[in-house]
Length: 295
Image 1: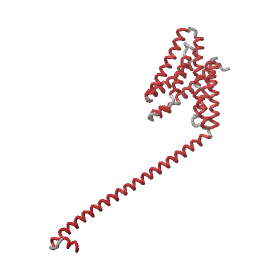
Image 2: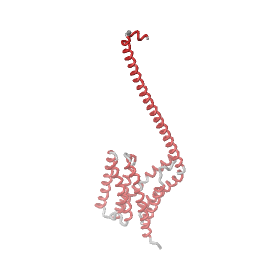
Image 3: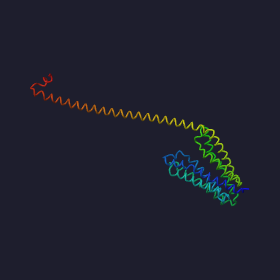
């Protein structure tokens, strides 16, 4: 018979790998945003601040002073905390001044809150079991709060009737992560961590259902976008062609104008020469100027 602790460790390791991959899945987004100027303004910093706070409480929950025997929880969300601090650092380095102030002030507030909570519990409560209850309650609330972005995504999919904004690997990762953490917590009789992860797993299954329901409409939306892009490119091509033709006509008119100016100058030169010859012709023949003009 397989030992329950061994099964718990196996599911904990699997949950660690999946969770760390999910935390790191935003790296390409930030990489592209840093490459493009002002792209960080389109990224919701509030989500990453909330994830940082969630990781802070879960790391606190995994510390032996508060909940012994949760080393795998500490490694997973400790890594997640480091990754999200890196995300916040990118905001502080590359975003606008207002966004930097917002991210910096909220992050410092989070650190003060977690420091105050941990300090009060360590200083005032010497019973580890009671500390577990307090910190577990905070983690339970934070885990439920982190389901809000999924609800927002669900509403967006329903409104647009398209799964364009959903990522199938991330959705599957959320389901597997929630399931593994739920089993890990349940085998350790940790209801504070098992309940929100079980709910998150169910929420992920519902998202998967939405993806399967609306994914067939996604290519159509992409085709419409491609058609609009093609029409825009065609219009730009026509405009560029018209501009090129107008430029050619302008050059032709300028050349014609130069030719006319040169011909006019030549005509004026010839006319001046003729007048000069006529002026010289009168005295040489001994006739008055008017008589020459008569001839």
